[in-house]
Amino acid sequence: EAIHLARDFGYVCETEFPSRQVAEYLCRQHTDPSDQYRRKELILSTKQITKELMDLLNQDRSPLCNTRPQIILEPNIQRHLTHFSLITHGFGSPAIVAALTAIQNFLNESLKYLDKMYPTSVTSMSDGKSKDMDKQK
Image 1 (cartoon, rainbow, N blue to C red):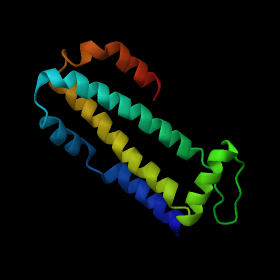
Image 2 (tube, rainbow, N blue to C red):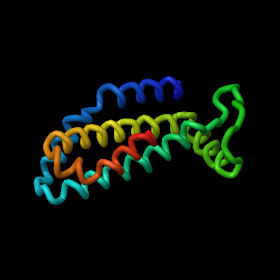
Image 3 (cartoon, helix red, strand yellow):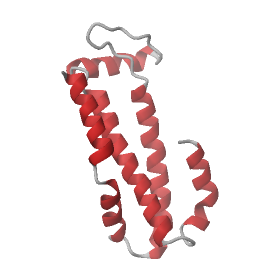
């Protein structure tokens, strides 16, 4: 049941969270063009750290029901993830990944909005770094 709930929650976060609307609303709150470069750099950094956490949680091989998947993480981190999984009945890590997916979508939409509203000032200053960050996706 918890696994099914986590899958449903993931689907809803992916498809129904209003990422674009929230991104546009929050970006409109910061209208000073001189702040937009810094904002874009913060968004790119946040995307990278969020992706690292998602990648780690997606490698979690905690036992679910009667399955014991082959462990691929170091035992010292897998032990803690397994404990978290057990006390959340398997819902914890998938729910966090689902929420982080919604955040990633929001960050992507924020970047799109900034690129649309400030095409030269924001993009030209960070082209090299932005392309490097995109490769790491």
